[in-house]
Image 1 (cartoon, rainbow, N blue to C red):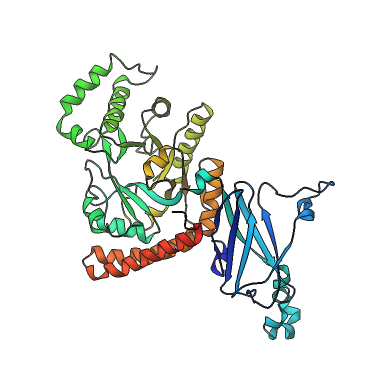
Image 2: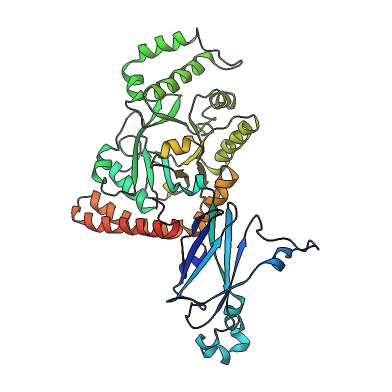
Length: 452
């Protein structure tokens, strides 16, 4: 978390690049507040591409020599700033003042030998951050979620309703419940929580051939269950797989029956209107769940729509999946990626280790991922968060993880905590949940601006 987000509000914190924007900064707390009767010096500092000329000596801080300093007085405790933010990047807005002494704690002077850093704080100044985006990303809504989740309807530990509420409590904006051998078990939870407009529940299933089958694929949003076909129509599948031998070329060295079954599985998911996410090839079941050669063929030959590059595995195994994806990129294969937990409980923290941040247009999460607007996030306990995907999305996501999601998650925690009681029968909490969700909406508009 960026500490300054707790003592300053920057609205909006995301602006459209190369257009003049007005930023309002309000101070809440700390040793540098905005007083209407004193003047502040302000600089706008891009983190990547400079908007001023470098010095001729090519010195380390050479850009700062040409950087313009603006003077501004607050209005009702707020700084109102207008600036054209060049290009897509993070910016520091640095402000300071030499006129703050009359507002400082009088004890500072008495302890000047020890508290000198507090005395000099206003003159040294402080920075807050904003991010300027190109129009294609600026118009999209940032949403964080999980597309591979299990409940007690298969081998998970809690009901779909409690799982959904617990994910909201953890700050997630969307989840897909994808139980084994079952389809759309999220229907009751989706209906029960339909009034929570900021939280999206997607229906789906984890498909495999029979109850303990080799082939796994996450199917989201289809109009019928592919698992049902595996369970109830095995002879049909055998016939249709056999017929594929006449039209499908099996890559050299691969098991023909397995490959043709995977072709059939993907085609059936697409026939249902579903979105196929390839999960956990390096899941350790005594050996890796899927051979690297088969995984390469699945990714290269379009037998999935997205790759679960972070997926419920220990870090080593997820690292192997990341390396595979990187190899495929080197080979010219571009495939959307997601991060999912494959969680089987939402009560003990395992549902927080991986996630997908999708940049969503027209409230269509899956199409946005398919269009390449997603990253995978890895949050290993006691380690720094890591983000995987295209550089522009990774840079923007890190900004959001530092500046947006901490407060967003706190607000969602309140709503989700109430949801947990609501799904257990305390329906009188609905109005309180709606109020909590409205605060999430208000904060989103403050941070991103009202772009709708």
